[in-house]
Length: 385
Image 1 (cartoon, rainbow, N blue to C red):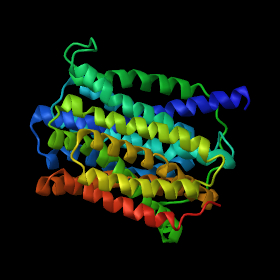
Image 2: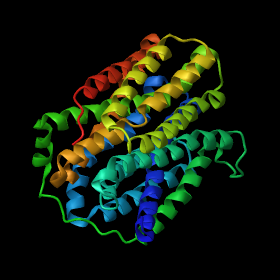
Image 3: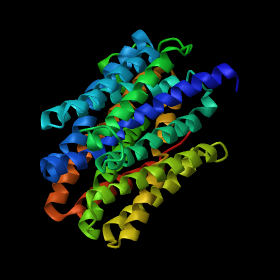
Image 4: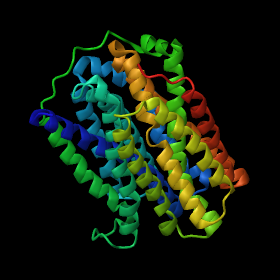
């Protein structure tokens, strides 16, 4: 790879790291719940709110990309994300945190819709799946570092007076500033705009069987992702009697395993069919969630949480790349639909909150298991072209 291509790819990967900031919503939700004394259903409004904006902004972002380009859309998304990271530096009221998570969701909806297809302007079609997977690896680094920064700040390890666990917003805000500057200074030549599309024509793509199945697959993937992110600490507090600061490390374990899985998947999918990786991952995820529902020991729960992370690590890039490769002339519109599927991060936490309030955290795990069963069904239909 030439130096210029390497620099372009590095700038894009830094944006993937910034994309991972959205996953701080899991550990942040638990700290806000503790500080404000909220129920599970009330607290789960925060991650649901983050992913609600994917429903509203994904399709408009696809249309916007056709007008101003993918790179400029990513730059706008970084600025919105930066604004979301600045707000918590001024307090922790319920209203302020609602505004924070709303902006975080809007910025991430813009970013995920535009950044993934931007990768296709940097690498070849043959390397798209593995590069998107490596991007998820970089994203996962930001995801698993967030609980560590929050815990360190909560215990006074980071010298930022008055912020406590919210120190992670200050750290990530500085990185977001760097990402804006680096991407703005990096020239990326984009392809011609996609075929003209509007709301109706974009949504009409859901009539294509594979696009619809892939959309539902994204719904389930993000439901498991956000669900594990928020439920893992609660499981350990409920069954092992751990404090939030200690149980919060379960979120990091999940993302560490996701990180390892993304890195391994990026290398593996250059040698074997992504479809095979997808099928094995789905089987492992079902096994992990069944174990998570049944096991009571702290060690067993940690292992199951890690296995969910490992199994869920390559689901998104495989589905996304398959959908893009099926409809290359409508890549922006398909990207918008796939990212709209992240609305599953709104649906699943709400269902899980109701289920856990009714029967305990086992109810939340049962909701995630339903999503894993659907992904197993999708594995039988998935084909890469």
